[in-house]
Image 1 (cartoon, helix red, strand yellow):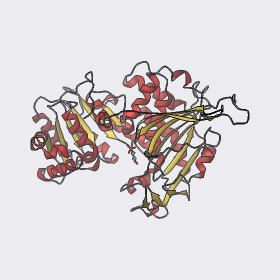
Image 2 (cartoon, rainbow, N blue to C red):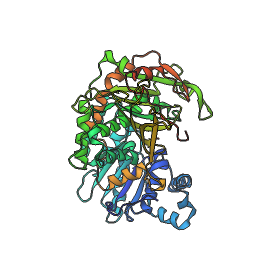
Image 3 (tube, rainbow, N blue to C red):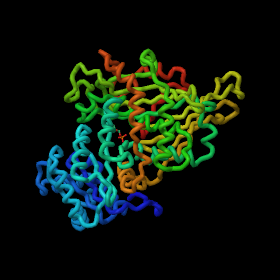
Image 4 (cartoon, helix red, strand yellow):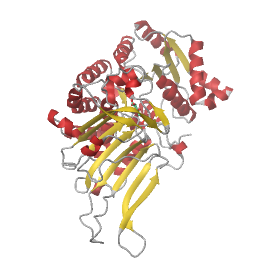
Length: 499
Ligand code: BG6
C-alpha cells in the first residue's frame, strides 16, 4: 500500500472515462493503479470508472477486466466482496470512437450517474484518434466546464515532429483550454524523478556546486535490456531519439538544469523548464555527426538469454535503419551551464537496465599527496532512478596502511527502505489530474520546443542508408567513447542491480 501523506489533497468524486479501456495500457497500468487508488482513498469513493467499449458485450468486457486484474491486482479478484465492490464502480458505454452517437451515449451515461459532474477523459488510444475523440467530446458538450471540471489526458507521442506536434496542440486547444489538457510523460510520475527536485531544492549543499564552476559534464541515461517487444509498427516510425530522448530524457534534463522556481506550482515549474529548453544550443547539420550517436541492436545474449537482432523482430523490414540506441550531446547556453556537456543516451538490449543522472564533477587540480600517483579520480554523484532508486556518491579516500595514496570510496543511499511505500507513476499522475495539478505534465510549449531541438537530427538521420550495429547485451558502441572523449571519466555505463 502506498504511503499517503495526510496533507495530500483528496480528489473530488469524478467520472473516470477511459477510451481504449480494453487495451494493454489500461490492463497493465490504469486499472491496477485506479484499484490501488480507490483502496487507499486517493480516488473518491463515489467515483465511477466508465469504459467506452466497441464490439464487445458488457459480459465479455467484465471478463477481460477480471483477467487483467487476476494478473495485476489478484487480491481484488480473490475476495468476492472486494471484486463486487469494484464491479459496482464499472460502467460500460458501448460504441465506436469514430461515431458521434457514442459520445452522445457517453453524455447520457454521465448525466445518469447522480451528482457527479466532474469528468476525466483518459485517451489510452493511438494518437491518431485524439482528434476524433476531442471533436466527439465537444459535439456532445462534454468539454465545457459548466458544472464540474473536465480534464483530458493524453499519452505520448505528442506528434512525431514539430509540425505534427503543433497541429495536435491546435486540434486539442480548439476544444479544451490548455489548463484542461494533461500530457502524460510517465517518467515525470516516477517518484525517483520527482526526487531530483527535492535533492536539488531541499538540500543547501547542492546549489553552490550545481553549475559550470564545479561540474565537468552530466550524463542522463535510460538503459534497457528489453527489445522492442511487440511494438515494431510504432517503433519503426519512432526510433530511440523520439521514443526516449525527445520525451523522457529531455524532460529530466530540464529538471536537472532549471533554476529554482518561485514556488512549487505547475506554471512556475514549467516556466523554469521552458527557459532551459529555450537555452539549448541548436545543433547545426554539420555538427550532427560529432554530437550524436545512433545504433541498432544485432543478435546477442541479454541476461543469459539469446536475443534476436532488431531486423529479425516481427514486422521490422530487414533493411531497417531505425536506431534502437541514440545519444545526443547538448549544450545549454546560459550563465549556469555554459560549456557543460549534457549527454543524453538511451538504448534497448543493453548490458544492464538502469536509468540514471550522473553528475561528474571536475578533477581535483593536482595531486597533493604523492607526486608519483596520478590526480585522484573526479567525484561523481549518481541519482539512480530505477530499478533500485537511490543516490551514489563517489569520493576518494586514503588507502589503508603507510601510504597517502587514494582509492575510490562509494557511498550508497537507497531511496526508500520499503519499496511498497513507493507510488506507481500512474497513481501519482492520475491523482494529480484528479486534483488539477499540472506540475508533472508537459505543456504545449515544452513539447513543441523539444521537437524543434531534435528536428535537425531527425532530418539528418532520415537520410542514412546504413546504421552501426551493436551486440545485444553489450556496451559495444565505440562511437560513445568518441562522443565522451573529452568528458572526465568518459562514457558512464550503469551497473546492473545485482553487481
Ligand atoms: C516508453 C517507451 O515511453 O518508456 C518505451 O515508449 C520504453 O520504449 C519505456 O521501454 C520505458 O519506461 P520505463 O518506465 O520502463 O523505464
